Length: 105
Image (cartoon, rainbow, N blue to C red; front, side, top):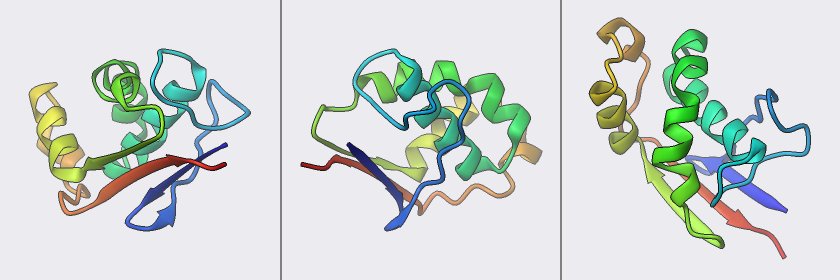
């Protein structure tokens, strides 16, 4: 079982690909939902999150180590800018946010 938090609070699972929850470290449905959930939490922009979550999955989520990971909001913000996110889509972004994931025994 996987636990993902944002600044210590559980990250809400936006179910689109995987009804069973988050995963990471490969290119499946659980990682796709994790990418979508992170982007939606970070930007509050559904169109942007849905449009970019697969690219975000391949850049970050597929590469997370199996046991534990941390992703800084500043890195997400940089990535979004590099991928052409409009400034209006970034107005809610908080570069100080921290996302973490860990496997539970």
